[in-house]
Image (cartoon, rainbow, N blue to C red; front, top):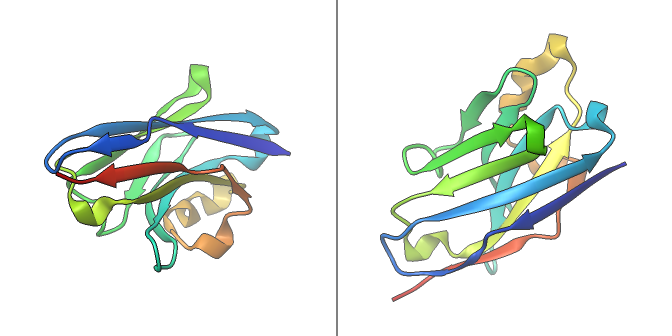
Length: 130
C-alpha cells in the first residue's frame, strides 16, 4: 500500500510561481515511478511530468515542458513540482500518482497515461487568476 499526500496548492496571479509537494509513504517497491497530473473542470485528467525515483530520470509532457520542473528529495520521500509563469489555463486540481516500474522497464516511466497509475493522492487545487 502506498499513501500520497499533496500540498502547496493555492491562488496565484498570472506569471506567478508555485511549488507543489507530494510526500509518499508505504511500500517503496510500488512507487518507483512518481508523477504529477492535473484535471481542470470539465476536462480529462492529463499527465504533466514523471520521475523514475532510482535514478531521478525525468520526463515531461508538452503541457509541462519549459515551465514546470519535477524533482525528488529521496531522504524526505517527497516529489516536487515547481511551476513557473503560471497561466489561467493552468487552473486545475493537481494530483500526485505512483506506480511500480521494474529496472528493466524503467523507460516506461516516461508514459504519462492515467490508467497506468494505480495509486493517487487526494489532489491540491491551483487557481491562476488576476
